[in-house]
Length: 81
Image 1 (cartoon, rainbow, N blue to C red):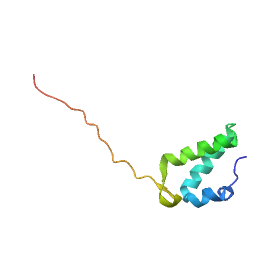
Image 2: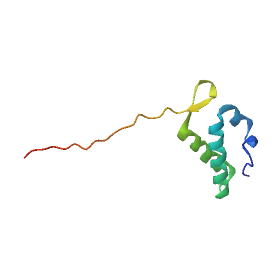
Image 3: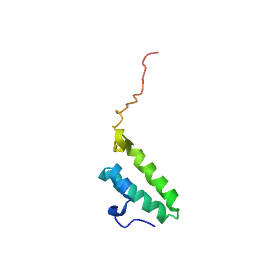
């Protein structure tokens, strides 16, 4: 059953995830449930959404992934004959 508010998330999730990650989990879980997924599948979708932006650290706490450095792909032009 979809959660009505973030406070309804299981305590283990609230203990592990920072507030923004809890919001991601909440939104993804509810969207998956609204699309007809069972609770287990919705939890998998929610955790995958969290893993896109967060990673576990030592001690079980999750933190936001560092952003990848920007990659600039410049076109190489050659001149001449």
